[in-house]
Image (tube, rainbow over all chains, first blue to last red):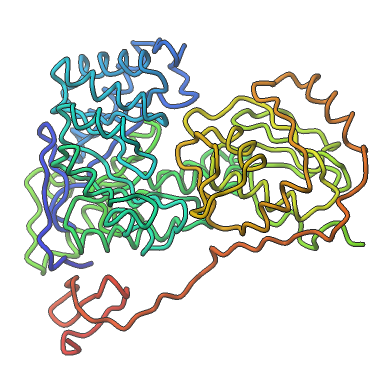
Length: 310
Length: 197
């Protein structure tokens, strides 16, 4: 393992600390709730869902976090303004944890940013994400909101190389007039969480691992990803899934360790149901990484798995 | 004249291969609809960039395919179906952006403008976005599976440019400390001895 020469920023999001040198802080884990085809969702457009089941899932993640020492974030996925509003209300009622507001549609993300500002939840919200699809109206909505934390996505649809992804953040890679980091500054984003963007395997999933290290070395911002998207988009594995669902879960959950070994500070691990498996898996990696950097003058925090579980 | 590329379909994906000589392929967007072997290819497509590229590459490498039925539910935000229709109608601009697409990130990275033009010339798209009724889908498949002739040109092999590109550079700094004696230069990805710097 290794230590970055560049000072590594640690951000504090509603009490959850993310970033630092490998082995210093436990990996922050975000499970997704209300995702596409999530069985607890009854009507995604209207934001209707089984409240008891949703509460149970959030508690499951919270208990896993408490036991292992890995802090947690709730990743809220919504597809309509009405839906995401209900989801935000519910999650903030049930848990004190920070939450990600995520949607494939810019208009829904903009609405969520406006809503959390209105109801005083902006300090707990993390915008997901500032990416190359951002337009003037989304920039304006985010700038007008009180949100100051965002994931910044290194996806470059024209050049998925390491250089292409880094340039997207730095200068817009010739596709945007300015880099996404600069756009984030204009939007008032103080806590920048870099996501190198997990493209499918065969289209540069592995490059995202290298970019994690490169981005931390260059900027020092906390960096992480939704690495499970690589196995979940793997057609070969998906064909095996029908015969052997356990095999699929092993690859999906196990991918967490790869991102941690590549210096990831946070991981969007996918379905929140996997919390009881992901948290111990991540704790195992954190312990080993912490031991591996012990001679580099990196001290793990008190509530690090190395201090809680071994 | 050869009508099918040797290793067709060239790109793997969430689809099943039916009759390679069929004139029609079926794209079910975000829906999973039971495939029929009467279509050359039958599968989903959820993204406005890589998904669109795969459909183009696999369609133009089989000259038998003259029709593509675009059905199933659209993927929200990504608008994969809308983007496929847009690239067929309008092509791509100088930056590789699909003209007229309102998908989130509608850019083409791995295939050439010539491949897009071949796609426009070779196939006719049927816009049936939202259709999930298998009976209705099969009516269209059966109507077109043997209709007309193959495209009068050899299959177009649009090889991906994404495969390993070496960007090896000589390490110039040690920005990651591995131990007292070893450093890593993140730009080159090379681990070096401290005395090298």
